[in-house]
Image (cartoon, rainbow, N blue to C red; front, side):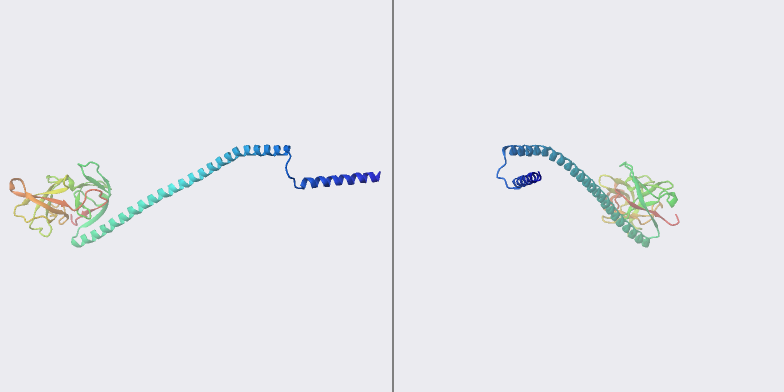
Length: 280
């Protein structure tokens, strides 16, 4: 009995080893059932992988779109901030240039006369083209009074007509007329005691000031610099207004009239000066 068991055990080991060698050994071709099973499994795997890859690709595209959207949003914010900073820088540079010009202007004026120049910012402008006024950020609290002359660094632009505690309304020279309240007595720079005239109007089409009541014997000519004469004490003496561009006979030939090109621009005013005359 012992020998039979041993013989059966040895036979089983031999068969097991033979099966292992047959399994691990090289095979020339697969059998038909094996090939069919392999092809079927491969086809099913490929059929299942296509939608799986599509779904995975869809979510990957969604993720990439989300990333691109966020990057685009950040770039837009950066670009907007850059534009704002650039505009702010340009505005500050322009303001710095204007203030330097204003400082140089006040220093030159203080050397030529004893007037005090109070710089003010233009707070608002009238939208009405037939009622040109501006509002400045100086008022009664700052010692501003009605009828004070107002100018820019280029020349005279108008006078204060209304004052509140913190703001003042300035009527521009474009509102000149022949009334005593608006007309300006003027003369010629360098010939203050020889020339005389009255600024009584403004031609909106040509942008010229109209100077009337010029005596026929007056030597006023093209190129002369017109300044305030100080007569009537409404405007201080010696404030530059503009340059004579032409002269003609006035009504009835008794006096002459002239067109004066103003030095100052009446549009886009940013900073102006209120002229304070000591003793007035």
